[in-house]
Length: 113
Length: 116
Image (cartoon, rainbow over the protein chains, first blue to last red):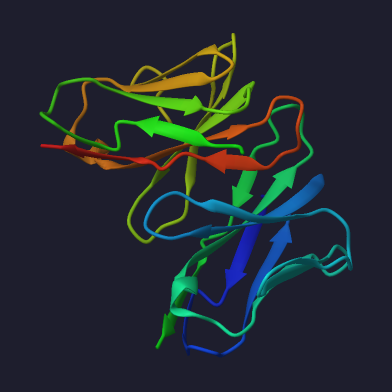
């Protein structure tokens, strides 16, 4: 069965800290891995990763994929209270045109001032 | 770019009534849209995949006669919850993929449904 596992499930840090969120997967026909941020409403897209070892970066957020060890990490440096959210990891399967996403349960990040 | 809207954002209805939720891609065409359901503090649960001009593909355990999906155009998909009951109360979110694009899904803001 295809699955995506995120850790930790929950994390509380202080502003300015650096955090690393983990996402491991076991799927058939891997196509890509995506990270989303969900605050009170629906998820917003952060990154899509398809190749190992190539870091994607956007401001204080960065992410990298390891297709040999089947995991990805999302790093957030100098965290701010606005980073508080649930971070979702999803894997896209190469299975026809629909290419549905297999979702992890998310990591709930709380950044305290 | 890649903006998806949902309407309504909040619905409160009586048990037994039907509720229609609209999902629109505002600045792109979407041959494929997805409908999710999310319970508090849980992850997204895919209900069905909606393809323009064809029947939706439902996930196991999702009743197609209860959750009617119509994807009549490249920018609009609708989900109708028929004969809603309190257990259908949830957060319903749609997403859309750009036609001919990659697998990134862009999400609407969601619809909170409360069935009394």
